[in-house]
Image: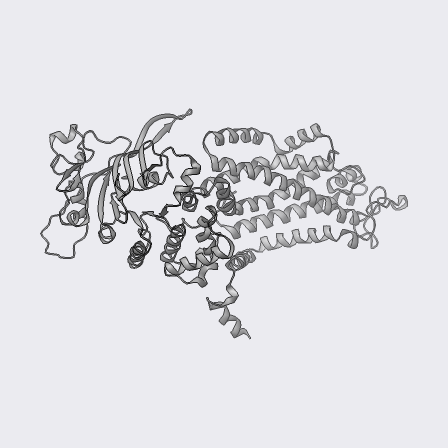
Length: 300
Length: 321
């Protein structure tokens, strides 16, 4: 059995290696698997994603059911993570909170990839004066501390989850613009781009067919890492009462609710804090692993 | 104009501005191509040789309008390409294609071979789907690869095979003119000859006209009908192959030829070793731009630029003739 598999592996003309795209992916996975931290990060992320998806089935209680009698109970066998000031089960709230946090992180980053990377691709491709002007504007945006920018946007739009997603999307735009621009301006100097011009290809088809596929790697890595930042910022905004509104089980908001009972019932704040930490850590380690597997020389 | 001329280049110039400072003022020009007049005949191979930085590639790209010429005219079958509207230009681009120097960067690593080869067909709406796929396979076989390789990515191919793929892509549009920009200089010597022979076979089969840019004289000697020598953005000698290799006229051509290693150790021919580097094309020497390095330089060379004159049926730009 073993012999036959090695034999097919080395037979280049074998039909099984029909799609090299798969083999390219396999090589990438093999490289990624060597990086233990990256794998651990990936597993952490996967764990939270699974938890978020299965929330209604795995949560032991409803995240909203109150029980005044057992308010602020410490962790016990019935309530592994304890209960908050209204007697709600913290574990269930954490499980449902994973949904909210991941959705905010994901859509926030999607917004910044579409606008940020889109703009960066354009400036990198067009270059010249357009590039100079746009990049100086991006520099201005970058000069704001990210969190302050998010705060400013929230105060303009008003609190709420959707606005948090928008604020987070906007504040990540500069990072994506810069990375996309620098990647694109190096990719566009490849001869295959010039070859496409020589064939008479339009700019749009060159951008979509040649430039974007070859500039994706660093953007994917940045997106993974930025989900962590987005999550953290969202939690921060909710902590300040500007994001998710009670009784939404958002981790940052839960952290904030437990603030008054740090001495009497520290688990109310600690548990959501740990959840935030692990998700952020997971995404960061996963992103680092992705980066190393894609290109060890790449720096972000 | 006779039908024999496929391309006629008149006073072609391409200057790159040198920009400096905060407001990017133009402080000078790199005269990469500086006044070239040349005709490419149908069915011939015109070899262009010269040192790095002599403007060979820039000339090739300016002919294709990949770089907009600063001045001059490029006639392709009697139509001036310079300043032509993009839409019309794209139609003409079908007729003229380019083979690039580096087969490692001239093919998109994300695409499969059949997608690379059929890209020009799709751009010009000639074929798609199954028909395009069939054409890709046919072209692969034309350039000596097998059609079973059409679904592979190019990282699975060697340099020579990649250049064959590049040539297949060039042929997809059935062009009349192929500008080959040092197509073999990135390849191993053993593979070079295969690719060159392939290009010669294809020239016969498809009735192609080549503008073959190279810095390797032996390659040019093998493939060309006529040879042009470029120095600092100008053609200094243009001659048919046989008389050029028998006796180069321009002192620069002579120096180039003497730099080719000889097999005969007793050969008495003395080597001309040029002094100094190629002067900067941003600030070329006065008069004949070759005079600071020329072993035969005369007083007149410093002051007066020689014109490309006809000498015994060949053209040379030198005050000696």
